[in-house]
Length: 153
Image (cartoon, rainbow, N blue to C red; front, top):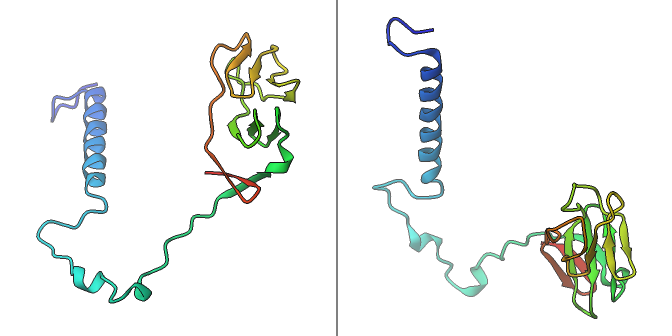
């Protein structure tokens, strides 16, 4: 269908409207967090007079996953959607609990491997493939260990 006023088909109009929206959204976000042109920032007012006037740093709460004591050396545990392993003492690793072969949820950690119940894939404690059919390693997750607690981060 062609609009007799503009000469555009409905399809052409929708595409051009979509591209205009994308361009507008990209330009609107491009300056986020920047001071508008021509405006001045009073940096003197923002500087503390002494170190005691300095604001406290923002604290981001990390989500506790498990205690280090819950993850045996040479083995691991599955907590929700995360596999936690400790291949050697003090070396904690975390991975997605989703098998890279067919997306099944991993069943557990036993005999030094992370095991998938669906098709028999097994992963080493470092997330690499021990036996297939999976061909890709598990997706790694960032964790931190502090005072005996493993947190997502």
